Image (cartoon, rainbow, N blue to C red; front, top):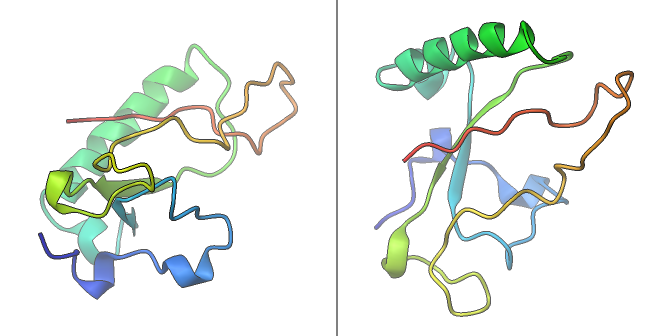
Length: 114
């Protein structure tokens, strides 16, 4: 399949942390009031995620910014991850466990939906 339109694509050239060998997906950042994030079906998904965030915040500490990212995995027709396997979700390398409640820079929640 063809990659998503440029307006929704993440510019990997600007992302020094992106490892092309580790990811074969196409990603796009979704903004609540702008671009695809403000349009169906993403606006409905973002509203549900915001509600989940409120519910999770009642039981775990959530601080800082909320970011929404969409990833498209093109399947067997897409580029491989360097090992010949079709692109697939892998746990993020920047999702480090932490018990420090003052550490607000760590990712706390990742949601994967199929």
